[in-house]
Length: 325
Image (cartoon, rainbow, N blue to C red):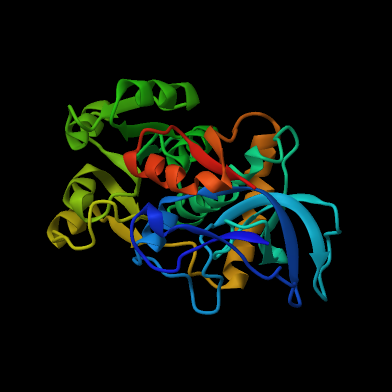
């Protein structure tokens, strides 16, 4: 099969197309003939040697795919060869085929194309597991999403809006904020022009946000804590702004606040299967009803993987970037 490999870490030139042996399904796995793969910031970090796959997992980048099941391992129930599916992976997505535990596989939602479905698994699992299963966002609460126009952001806006939350977002241009508004965001903050702490306090009569989903990390830690409402929950899922910062525990205590850091890739298979099952139960009906939709910026052929990584690094996209296989 054709796949993207990383003979060495570095710039986009490190991404190399190679022919590799076809994967064989282990017990409990299916093999997917890949139609498309999502491109995520985690892939950029892996390319630079900053985010290795969990031990024993594929060294091929790519954390989500869509395609057609081509083979079943022993003990797989509920799936058959020919099923159109999408899946969340620990790695291996930038390839013509990938083997994945059956518990991490989802059907392509009704009304979504096979290609566009590749933009759903990683963001849907990340958003639902963090804002609902971890932070317990509820109807009537205020939700702040940093990077509202990203793949994670566009999914989080829609899910939080569907849950009945007031949605606030940060983004770096009016074009991005306008798109966030179309998806359900009500409080729009250009982080280049305004202090998001001041803006979220202004929008909530000084109270702040009940849940903050942050992809920036250290750079935003102090301001995220300051933006929390009483009993607020800050969930950190990204490190674009660094890994180390000072935490004012007094400010956190005063708010009875929580700071939680999570990742999806390193969870064990049982935990991932639990999240996937929850997404299928709660998010898939929202997608099939049209209340939530995959937001795809563009699709690019696998051979243009370097350009796809450049696009993500430049942050000029809105929603997901997909590689077609």
